[in-house]
Length: 452
Image (cartoon, rainbow, N blue to C red; front, side):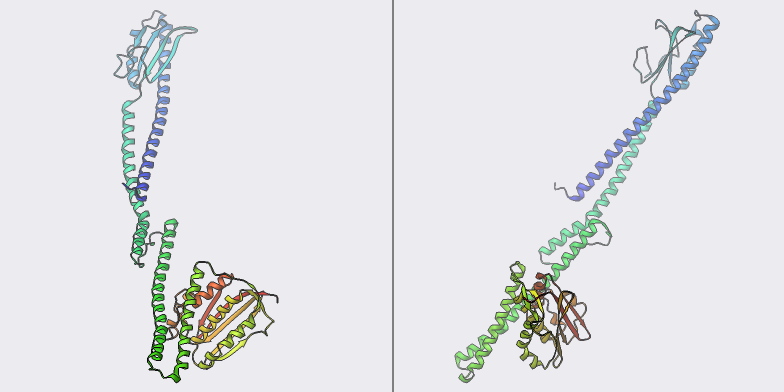
């Protein structure tokens, strides 16, 4: 039988309680025996002293020939019954001169009989020893038996109650683990919606484990949703240019498109091929980031010069949308940063492409570079629809399509901002986004460097 955590926890708890009760009962027994022994010793010593005084008085008055058996025979039984003892008076030769009566079952039957409690003291006149008082007593077996019965009864009750408590406690403590196992089996089947309960566990390791598991489940669920969206996006993004390319090439081959339009057609085909190339490059960049193969070669370079060159490349799109551009960029060769030029070029390209795509026609596009405290801060601003606050924490996640809430434009795989953040994180820098009242700003930093 496979022993679960619940079974092991329950058995260990019951075993620990049983051993504890046995040890406690044994300790009580030892303590009780010592107390009974001390009390019996005191009682036997007091009885012996009384008998010695009585015998000494008899010998003083009647001499050594006094018949002790007749004189003390009436006293010994009474004293023996009061103290649950058996008393004998012996002379110097060891002969019994007087006795409290026939020993009851369990009491000593001869002088040498072994007993649990025994007290012996000589008596005589002045310095002359004439005999011995020997008192024997067994412990109160009825009292000990009652004590043992009470201990056994209480032990059984405590072990049963503790076992029931341990059972429900173990069930309660292991319930999140069973739920997590059930959730994991659901994950295996593709269902990421189940969660482990944490309401009854407000602190401790079980609560932290359940919280971490639920957080992981939420991440897996979101990742699965993004993955499905990514597959749909890839299918759509690849299908569109391929359909366009196939259609135009087919038109050229079958003569549907006249020869004078072949140049225009080939230009469209080229643009679609370049679009496919960008999609494949984005997927390749994602693969390199995930496998840690993105290599950086940082060196000092002029961030302003690269930024202006990228902005000039976007001039046709800026004019097409009628955007007014506001620049706050230092003169080239005045502001250097220490980073990988190629990867930072990709960062700037992605951010500016994103800003232009989501700017409202005739709106404003802002770009600024500001040195401060050993850092260079780059800001890209566009005016359009505001990103909802609930979407802001996720705009840098892979496959996340922020344009769902900002524009009807659905192009792209949702990797641009993820690549931006990954590249900046590889430089040990970060990027932040702010969106309010139709103004959206992306701002990141790079370490400032001296001109190389």
